[in-house]
Length: 264
Image (cartoon, one colour):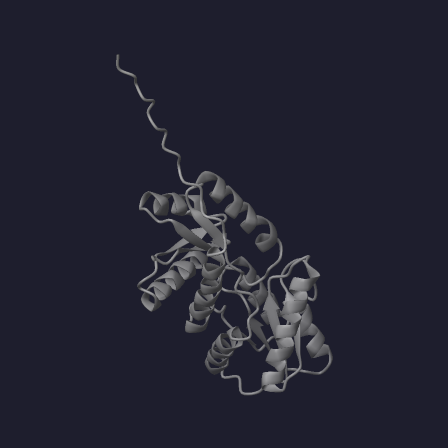
């Protein structure tokens, strides 16, 4: 049995660094699993769109597809946009079996990546002392999504025995700059900000610029491509692949039988 194709569905950005990161991740995944068909697609801002990719796969004879939302949060895009893509894909391609996996989520394994990015930043900036941390990410109007970030922030602080606060670039507070300023008002002068974004772009840049103006001594780079991110993608893909087995089979075209012609 051929394994389902994996279609990465990223949000997309006008910043070309974001798409470049997604394509680099796909390259990494292909090297890890050369038995899988893996393609990148984007919800907005840049090509290819998911339906373009699915159309190409369908034309090549692929029968099963796992769409993996390359998102950290299970908020609006995961709850609204991704299901809409899956529903439309099933409507456009009724002969295919299509399922969406869970989002990557704020998984604990990603803290290993965050630590590496932070150590590199501290080394480059010759920062040898920290007394507080800020975990910066995209915010949401979904309180449960923000609570998941706060949980991950606590775990990060426990790792390093430092006080930490979660901060959000949009839709929630505090912002990264506000979080840094609050620590400084409390007398903590060596505050580092962990950039918990998958790829470079407008929001990570905003978080870094405003946090540094507020007095942060270091701001790490986004998570980017790593073995941990790739393994998490493949884990979500594997679970969705098992769920795909429980879906009803896609309808097959009915071949009309020619009418019998009576001979005299």
